[in-house]
Image 1 (cartoon, rainbow, N blue to C red):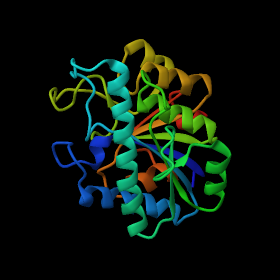
Image 2 (image 1 turned 90 degrees about the vertical axis):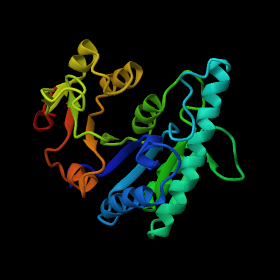
Image 3 (image 1 turned 180 degrees about the vertical axis):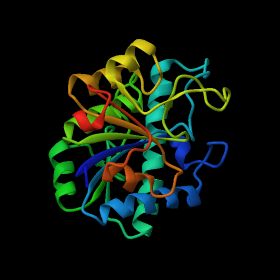
Image 4 (image 1 turned 30 degrees about the horizontal axis):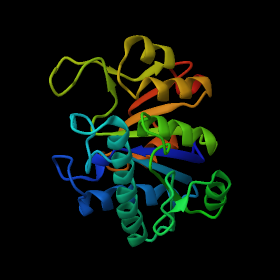
Length: 240
């Protein structure tokens, strides 16, 4: 296996129905089975979950940004609870850690405790983003991946990599097999927000963007197979 400890970033929409809303147990179970495949092979997995299926802060003009962001963080905790239940339903041992203090339902985020969970083969789900407004779950994923010493940050999406334009709207869109951090920043490709990409670059954390709906995709990525789009210093995983 190419990577031994990974941080998987899931959007809230990944748990939702085809429209990306609510929590679809069937879709959640499909994610759980993919993660179980690599956990069974001894890979340590952390997950950062978004909340967009339950709350979209953008467009909520009647709320101030800080309040809207805290609601979004609580949405990620709800998703984390659902994901934990589904994961344990397929036989994985999990722990939910929250950057906001909600001790009745989740452990507080403590880095050393998370590391101990990994050593015991548990999947750790990180919720509530960074615990601060004005930061996205992309930034939280990059931060947690660096803190736990992950070998790679995996961003699961509904497309099979990064394109120069929307492939659904433009049939001639070009897919990038690999990119450097600077190319992502210079071209503003929207892989992740600029804070997240900068964190990855400054800490030499490689990023792979891939299609979570492809059967066996997580296992293929962890094995080092060439799927999705690789982002790093060299634009090539073989040169790192």
